[in-house]
Amino acid sequence: MATNAARNTGILLIDCPDRKGLVAAIANFLYSYNANILHADQHQDAELKLFLMRVEWDLDGFALDEAQLRAAFAPIAEQFQMRWRLEYSTVKTKMAIFVSKYDHCLVDVLYRYRSGEFNCDIPLVISNHPDVRPLVEFYGIPFHVIPVTADTKVEAERQQIDLLEQHNVDLIVLARYMQVLSGDFVAHYPGKVINVHHSFLPAFIGAKPYHQAFARGVKLIGATSHYVTEVLDAGPIIEQDVLRVSHRDSLQDLIDKGRDLERTVLSHAVKWHTEHRVLVYDKKTAIFI
Image 1 (cartoon, helix red, strand yellow):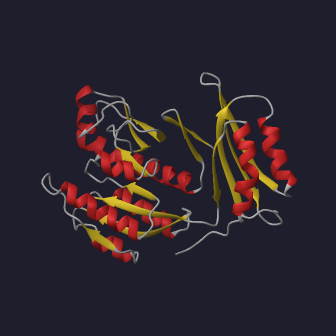
Image 2 (cartoon, one colour):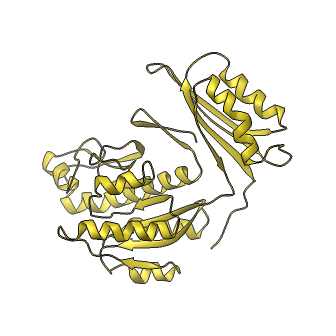
């Protein structure tokens, strides 16, 4: 797989009650241990009175290892009531892909992965149908078929979770996986399942959104990538895009045009997640790009 040269960096993602001195405290902490800050982005949510920040620094010459950093930063985090997450750019996300029969999103994700666009490894692809096996095996990725019916859903999800745990997967991408995950499955991977919905949520949730949109005579169609929660199609939104259509477009035209949107929004979401650019708060996201 082709890879892009990347700097060895540390990344902090922070949210906390907004107050004076936050930026100074974080910057001074990093500076005191010889950090060269490469990127720093922040956002104040005035309505919720929250401060959100992503800061990335070069680890060349940085004085602390991971354990030391966590211990040294903990008092600051406690002082400012921070929720915080530490990531390293050289640690690749282990990503599993779930897919059914539609392969357009899978094709795009696998191509971008092979091109080195995503900071991840893909140890396996899981499907409830065998149709995309040749495509997945072309990329040298193990492919597992686990059929799902109403009667076998619990057992099927148990098999899926066993495979994911065997491979230490920390991100699951639903590339048009046409099954609703159970609440128990989602609870195993909170904030770690990304879906693409072929609609501009919150409009036209559930099955056959293009059919719903066509019946309403919409002038814009869209696609949405979001984190999966126990509530169907209601998780925090990561990326969306739209395309103008008209009365001249048939239902099939909407479906065909929508596929391009689905590919784009899903790949953007995967890229931003694997680069640790997404901060989830209050049922929504801040994307630091």
